[in-house]
Length: 272
Image (tube, rainbow, N blue to C red; front, side, top):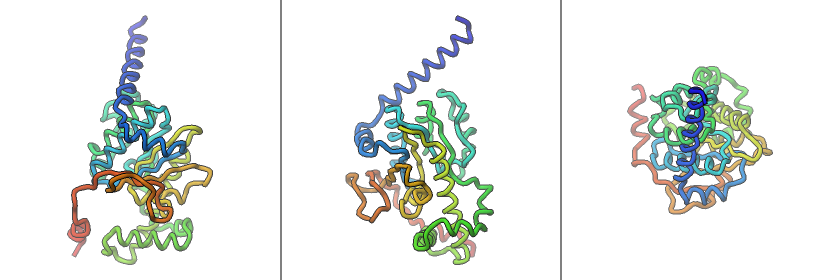
């Protein structure tokens, strides 16, 4: 056997060992909850970005899907459309993965999302940037066509969500442009899910809880033929159906972040 062939065989064996190791760490509780969601073409998992326990659940779900051979792709709000890990080997370094995803450390701390991302890479599953590229934001702000993509009441609800999300401190003339960006981001994520869908397998989207809301977010831009599950991570004692009509399919328990006064922080960042 040539040196090159030996090296290739060694690489394949390392990948297999890594995949087995990943499968052996699957959390039993996560695997049981996952069974209630499948089969699904896509699972939309909504998080709070500064909650470490939410990122732990994300890693566990990636591992559980990969162990079943079910994970078609991992799609991320945290990386832009057009960036992905296709072509990287299962033993790629974290630096290689960050570069492939054009990771924006200032916006998304790598240490928080690396466990889920690297679990997918180690399992040989492509990781896909799903968010609207920053270079397109200004154009989307000025695009009135985006105002037509949601029914009137849903558009109003999305605008109100933007107001509340900015603690009522956003100037009113910025509500429409910011709502358009939110819709454009949801649309970009939906496009990514549709492109990555595979019969009999599941695409997993990691995004903020507002993006996975069936009434306002990504599901609004997906065809009814695509079977999805919208799951939100929350501070509850046990998972179960949410009482609010149709926003999410399930709520999974996860510890909340450290209590912060986000509106006070937002206020201090505003120009006087």
